[in-house]
Image (cartoon, rainbow, N blue to C red; front, side, top):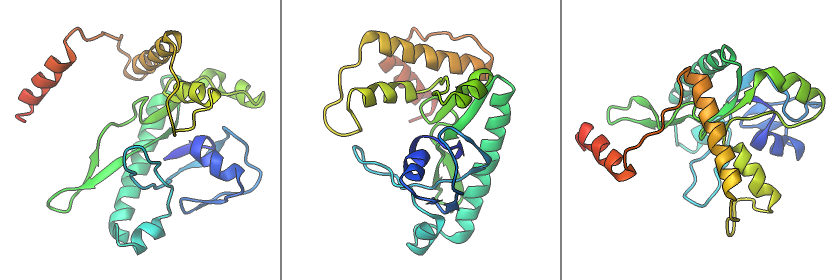
Amino acid sequence: MTGVTSTSLWTLYSRGNRNIGGNILPDGLVKNQKLPEPIITPSTKAEIGMHDETVSPEMLINAGIISKKMYEEIAEISLELFKFGSRWCEERGLILVDTKYEFGIGEDGTVMLMDEIHTPDSSRFWDASTYDEKFKNAEEPLGFDKEYIRRYLKEKGFAGEGTIPQIPDEIRVEAGLKYISSMEKITGLPFSPPYENAMESLANWAEKMKL
């Protein structure tokens, strides 16, 4: 889901593609521009180390991966979730730029929303108060998500393949602060770092979930 011309959508658009995930986009759009309405950009779920591929609803349906009825159900859920998330973020001074929703099918055939929702790992957030000025000046918006790390790696020549460059501590810390900031803005709660050992935390969670 995306509400802005940025990241993978912009990569495809800037190469001349106008049909992106089954969405026909007009000429004349610029990077980081808000779209009139959010759009769904379906993608495959690639194996570890591979890249997800943007596909159209028709491709998924024709390949027998999903039925037309089920796709429409997933699309409706996705749009409602994104609209809710956008309103929530707007009230807290953020722009929900884009996000990834993952769905599965239960044993009874029910569509199930899985994994994380509206986190800095699965979504991108921009500062709303500075967006207009930065967009006018063709500057990158102030973000609170993992895009900060992506840009650093891109500057070092890493594009997702090969050896990952060493990330300095100051970059790691700044990325962590961005995550904390987005969490505090979205939840309205102060960040309280966990002091429990990671393995103990997983064990306690597994016990709680009866795994």
